[in-house]
Image 1 (cartoon, rainbow, N blue to C red):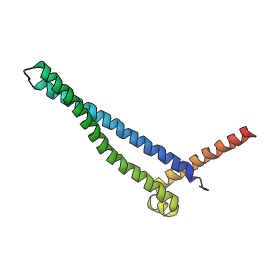
Image 2 (tube, helix red, strand yellow; image 1 turned 90 degrees about the vertical axis):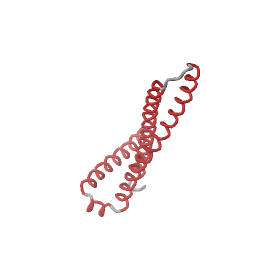
Image 3 (tube, rainbow, N blue to C red; image 1 turned 135 degrees about the vertical axis):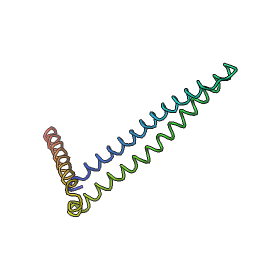
Image 4 (cartoon, one colour; image 1 turned 30 degrees about the horizontal axis):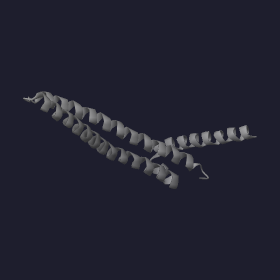
Length: 135
């Protein structure tokens, strides 16, 4: 906390939430694709009774909607979980041993260093403004 890692960790939660939201969006897109496929399949099925076709169509639509949503969300959540883990690992490696991290990944270390300095600078500026307003 003394070096300002609280700000970086807060931003890390923002990244995690954004990636989870992306999983929901991908699940919704997969759901729409499932509905499109169900509609194409239902149009190709020739049924004798229009009433029976409507009942099958409604249940088929809901089923494909749910299956598309669950499968799309699950697959994208696993993929986003890998990305979230990579972000956590990178931040942890940089926070715990910045010198070793700099030797192994100099370009990435420079980007993290600049981002960290910008975040800390903004954090300190916010506190200075608050202290000035309260005084």
